[in-house]
Image (cartoon, rainbow, N blue to C red; front, side):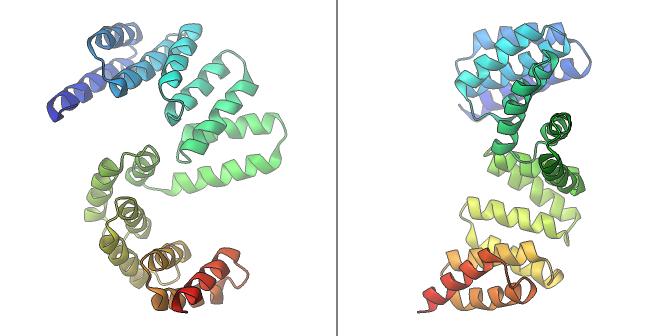
Amino acid sequence: MDTRSHSANEDQLKSIQQLIQTTKFNDAITQSKQLQKQTTDQEHQIELWYLIAVAQRYAKTIPAALSSINALLKLDETHSRANQEQGFIYLALDEPALAKISFEKAVKLNPSLVASWQALIHLYRDEKQQDKVQKAANQLEKLKKLPPALLAVTELMHEGKLLKAEQICRHFLQDNQRHIDGMCLLAEIGLELKIYDDAEFLLASALELAPNHIPARSQYLNLLIRLGKYKMAEQQVEKLLAIQPDNLSFKVAKASALTGLG
């Protein structure tokens, strides 16, 4: 798809989202279905199916919503938000067991989906699965601590939209230059895009600002091993083992560094 048609599709989707936000659900459904007839682009079809299903659920036409979301999942079963939407549809159909399966698949595909974790907490509580309630609550608390921009970045990363995630993350860091989690996320994007120099610089800078930030140091360690910088990796892993001597992943990393050093 060329840039111009992609931009047009984005505008069309925003227009439909606006209709849903202003509770014009039937208009949103009609407009989406008309656009579906005009496009052969699968990605655009998927996004339209998603908006149709959401609008149908809000319009309380639940069986139609289920049919739409299942049509989407036939095209892409790894669409995390579609699995989440299927969960909400099953809740509306009073099918909590099926809803739980959908929400669990959604967070497996994209661990940053706040609404799925919130739904799972209630479902686990109803089933008296206290361990799972606690795990879901811990993940939810971690996500809620993130600034909204960085939460959006993590969602985009899990959806494979790395360039858009990078753009938002860089913009956030322009206004929050010393934000360690932001620096770590941008470094993670750099790794995925194979921009290793940027990632290394970001993590080294983060550790200058926050020497006791274990996740940043662990991320830095893994990058150094990946780059074959074993001497530097050994120095980092010693610092981590001094704080967490029983951490198995740090012990494995130390063995990798020592093997690399020969």
